[in-house]
Image 1: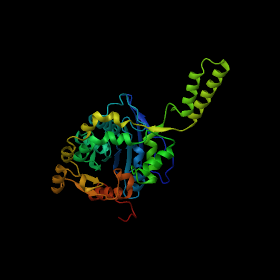
Image 2: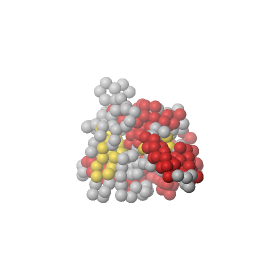
Image 3: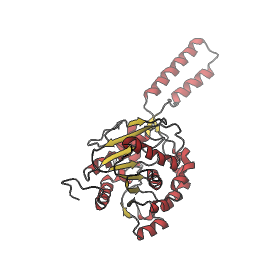
Image 4: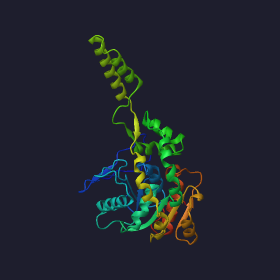
Length: 342
């Protein structure tokens, strides 16, 4: 059920997640690491997986005493559920509660929930709905209601602009870095394995199309020609299957009906969560009115991490770990590791 996420040397191919099955036919991909201290419950963004936290996990363990639980949200990574199309905020928040219940029963350890982008929104919904009885604090990474709602109109265009397939996993990793989706090669080499998968069916190629056209044009010729073409088609098909063509694990364009439910009212919900809160942003321009007022009133701590893309915890895992470690020690949730100089 448990799988180490703390990786000293990150492999080019990520390990498969551990998982557990419940009576409700859920098989959740869960990575666990550490044995002592509060649990950092990590929720990834849309289309990503728990593997996006791999480098951050290695760094945070060098800073503070803690445990890590990173999970693949429904329809993502290695998680399999009965109704994977239900990505409503309420359903995903309940999933979080079920995972913690299966892992720890009626006596869960202190938990700090941390979410990026969509995962940040789900973290807020989970905390607000009181699904975690031992919740210590809440950390949201680069998601704000105002900015998120404004971005929804252009989201489909962004998704259409991405490549639909990649020749290999290495090709996908290279694209993610060159496009700026992930600015840290070390993290991309682990993270992209959770975002893409091998195509289940071979894609068509000019060679196959040519063979099919040849059969149509020459169907009245001798049988030996037809057999030759069939043999050629079979050989071409086998060649395609040898190719490692990769595509996205999650078709995010089909989740559009849930987008507003993830983000609408998020700022007010965040501010009402009765635990210490940390908001990490890639730019100060992302703050909306409610959060600006709340921040001035001291209702949460905010830190801007410049020179990062949207995947802040992947682009700058050391900066995110430093901010989170300082926050947790300040609130006496844990202690710095012996010998660590902050």
